[in-house]
Image (cartoon, rainbow, N blue to C red):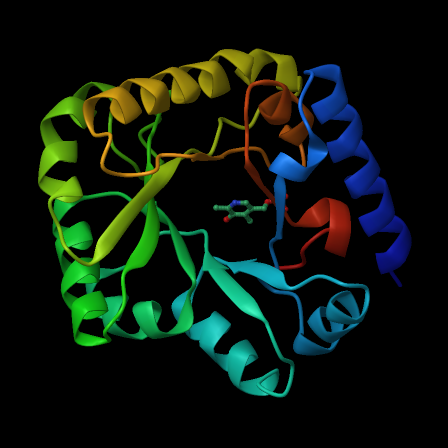
Length: 231
Ligand SMILES: *Cc1c(COP(=O)(O)O)cnc(C)c1O
């Protein structure tokens, strides 16, 4: 059994402490609890503790849980994982925010489907800062070329950038990754001031404190709240 209330309390304390260390207001940081593999009953318990946003990385899994939890008011789902273009239609109906737009063609599909659904979808662009072959995301160097085409799409609002840092034993090792994501975000905000670019979705269970010190506004945390996943 996991002690959800204690885990959540501890994570919230650690978020606040990291913010204060960096001279930031903890209220600037949105916790996105990541519930992949977590059953709906546990999400219900988390909701009872006050959580309203939940992050999922698969459209079908999220849809099944959203159907199960349809009686809970104000639930907001964030898609934090890779999205396939053929799921864009379902995604724009289900998710408030899409964190990981990783190609121009996906951005076009999401924009098209968003317009059909009569909404504008807040999105973040995923950046593969460390250039890992196994990860999705734009290479940082291609951002200046691709971003103008994406910001021109009518169905999207560019909320910022997202990254998944390399898995390392010591989170200090990935501090430069977070710092670079922030620098790119600042640069894009200068180049494309019509969009907000306010958000940096970075930091997970193993590295969220360092990410907050480097400017994260959304931290995506799974295991520290819900326990180890048995996939
Ligand atoms: C699973 C996942 C997370 C949460 O990871 P934890 O290490 O469990 O905190 C965050 N972001 C993405 C994209 C994920 O797939």
